[in-house]
Length: 146
Image (cartoon, rainbow, N blue to C red; front, side, top):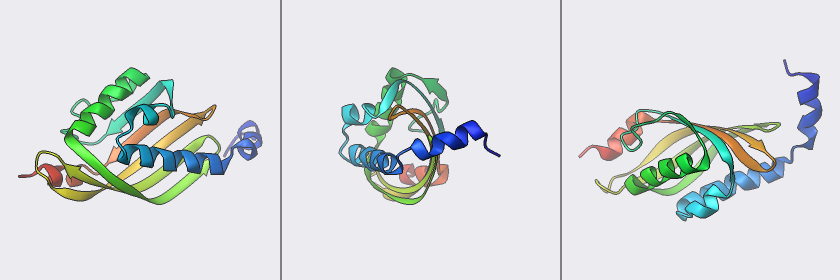
Protein backbone atom coordinates (compact mmCIF):
# COMPACT_ATOMS: atom_id res chain seq x y z
CA UNK A 1 0.00 0.00 0.00
CA UNK A 2 1.30 3.43 -0.88
CA UNK A 3 1.40 6.29 1.56
CA UNK A 4 -0.99 9.19 1.13
CA UNK A 5 2.03 11.47 0.74
CA UNK A 6 3.33 9.44 -2.22
CA UNK A 7 -0.12 9.16 -3.80
CA UNK A 8 -0.55 12.95 -3.75
CA UNK A 9 2.77 13.37 -5.61
CA UNK A 10 1.94 10.92 -8.44
CA UNK A 11 -0.25 13.32 -10.47
CA UNK A 12 2.61 15.84 -10.60
CA UNK A 13 4.83 13.41 -12.51
CA UNK A 14 4.77 14.04 -16.24
CA UNK A 15 4.52 10.61 -17.84
CA UNK A 16 5.24 12.07 -21.28
CA UNK A 17 8.43 13.61 -19.94
CA UNK A 18 9.60 10.26 -18.56
CA UNK A 19 8.70 8.51 -21.83
CA UNK A 20 10.74 11.10 -23.73
CA UNK A 21 13.69 10.53 -21.38
CA UNK A 22 13.51 6.77 -21.99
CA UNK A 23 13.53 7.38 -25.75
CA UNK A 24 16.48 9.78 -25.38
CA UNK A 25 18.44 7.13 -23.46
CA UNK A 26 17.90 4.59 -26.22
CA UNK A 27 18.81 7.07 -28.97
CA UNK A 28 21.99 8.15 -27.20
CA UNK A 29 23.05 4.56 -26.52
CA UNK A 30 22.69 3.69 -30.21
CA UNK A 31 24.50 6.87 -31.27
CA UNK A 32 27.26 6.14 -28.72
CA UNK A 33 26.70 9.67 -27.40
CA UNK A 34 28.18 9.18 -23.96
CA UNK A 35 28.19 12.89 -22.97
CA UNK A 36 24.57 13.22 -24.06
CA UNK A 37 23.62 10.06 -22.19
CA UNK A 38 25.41 11.14 -19.02
CA UNK A 39 23.56 14.47 -19.10
CA UNK A 40 20.38 12.52 -18.28
CA UNK A 41 21.83 11.26 -14.96
CA UNK A 42 22.45 13.09 -11.69
CA UNK A 43 26.04 13.57 -10.51
CA UNK A 44 25.37 11.27 -7.56
CA UNK A 45 23.61 8.54 -9.57
CA UNK A 46 23.53 5.14 -7.86
CA UNK A 47 23.70 2.22 -10.24
CA UNK A 48 23.88 -1.52 -10.11
CA UNK A 49 24.44 -3.93 -12.99
CA UNK A 50 23.22 -7.43 -12.19
CA UNK A 51 24.28 -10.37 -14.28
CA UNK A 52 27.26 -12.54 -15.04
CA UNK A 53 28.92 -10.00 -17.30
CA UNK A 54 32.39 -10.74 -18.54
CA UNK A 55 32.22 -7.31 -20.17
CA UNK A 56 31.64 -5.79 -16.75
CA UNK A 57 33.28 -8.22 -14.35
CA UNK A 58 32.87 -5.99 -11.32
CA UNK A 59 29.09 -5.81 -11.62
CA UNK A 60 28.12 -4.26 -8.33
CA UNK A 61 26.39 -1.29 -6.75
CA UNK A 62 28.31 1.96 -7.21
CA UNK A 63 27.74 5.70 -6.93
CA UNK A 64 28.60 8.74 -8.97
CA UNK A 65 28.77 9.82 -12.57
CA UNK A 66 32.50 9.07 -12.78
CA UNK A 67 31.96 5.41 -11.86
CA UNK A 68 28.95 5.22 -14.20
CA UNK A 69 31.10 6.64 -17.01
CA UNK A 70 33.74 3.94 -16.42
CA UNK A 71 31.09 1.22 -16.47
CA UNK A 72 29.52 2.49 -19.69
CA UNK A 73 32.92 2.91 -21.35
CA UNK A 74 33.84 -0.67 -20.46
CA UNK A 75 30.59 -1.97 -21.92
CA UNK A 76 30.93 0.16 -25.08
CA UNK A 77 34.41 -1.22 -25.77
CA UNK A 78 32.98 -4.76 -25.85
CA UNK A 79 29.59 -4.45 -27.56
CA UNK A 80 27.76 -2.18 -29.96
CA UNK A 81 24.17 -1.29 -29.09
CA UNK A 82 22.12 -1.64 -32.29
CA UNK A 83 18.88 -0.47 -30.69
CA UNK A 84 16.21 -1.55 -28.27
CA UNK A 85 12.58 -2.46 -28.43
CA UNK A 86 10.68 -1.51 -25.31
CA UNK A 87 8.38 -4.37 -24.37
CA UNK A 88 6.84 -3.04 -21.14
CA UNK A 89 7.00 0.17 -19.13
CA UNK A 90 5.46 0.83 -15.75
CA UNK A 91 5.64 4.37 -14.37
CA UNK A 92 4.69 4.89 -10.74
CA UNK A 93 5.50 8.40 -9.65
CA UNK A 94 9.26 8.85 -9.84
CA UNK A 95 9.84 5.11 -10.28
CA UNK A 96 10.03 3.35 -13.65
CA UNK A 97 10.28 -0.35 -14.47
CA UNK A 98 11.23 -1.11 -18.05
CA UNK A 99 11.65 -4.39 -19.92
CA UNK A 100 13.41 -4.17 -23.25
CA UNK A 101 15.03 -6.32 -25.88
CA UNK A 102 18.35 -4.88 -27.02
CA UNK A 103 20.21 -6.00 -30.11
CA UNK A 104 23.96 -6.11 -29.45
CA UNK A 105 26.99 -6.87 -31.58
CA UNK A 106 30.09 -8.22 -29.87
CA UNK A 107 33.18 -6.48 -31.27
CA UNK A 108 35.44 -9.48 -30.62
CA UNK A 109 33.33 -12.24 -32.17
CA UNK A 110 31.18 -10.19 -34.53
CA UNK A 111 28.12 -12.05 -33.26
CA UNK A 112 24.81 -10.21 -33.13
CA UNK A 113 21.99 -11.18 -30.82
CA UNK A 114 19.05 -10.00 -28.79
CA UNK A 115 19.49 -9.56 -25.04
CA UNK A 116 16.61 -9.19 -22.59
CA UNK A 117 17.18 -6.40 -20.08
CA UNK A 118 15.10 -5.13 -17.15
CA UNK A 119 15.79 -1.61 -15.91
CA UNK A 120 14.53 -0.06 -12.69
CA UNK A 121 14.94 3.71 -12.58
CA UNK A 122 14.18 6.53 -10.18
CA UNK A 123 13.91 10.14 -11.31
CA UNK A 124 14.46 13.34 -9.34
CA UNK A 125 14.30 16.85 -10.80
CA UNK A 126 14.19 15.40 -14.33
CA UNK A 127 17.37 13.35 -13.91
CA UNK A 128 17.91 9.67 -13.21
CA UNK A 129 19.24 9.23 -9.68
CA UNK A 130 19.10 5.43 -9.51
CA UNK A 131 19.35 2.69 -12.09
CA UNK A 132 19.43 -1.05 -11.55
CA UNK A 133 19.85 -3.16 -14.66
CA UNK A 134 19.35 -6.92 -14.85
CA UNK A 135 20.75 -8.57 -17.97
CA UNK A 136 20.22 -11.98 -19.55
CA UNK A 137 23.65 -13.49 -18.85
CA UNK A 138 23.14 -16.46 -21.17
CA UNK A 139 22.44 -14.17 -24.13
CA UNK A 140 25.64 -12.24 -23.38
CA UNK A 141 27.61 -15.51 -23.16
CA UNK A 142 26.24 -16.60 -26.56
CA UNK A 143 27.55 -13.36 -28.10
CA UNK A 144 31.01 -14.04 -26.68
CA UNK A 145 31.20 -17.74 -27.48
CA UNK A 146 33.71 -18.38 -30.25
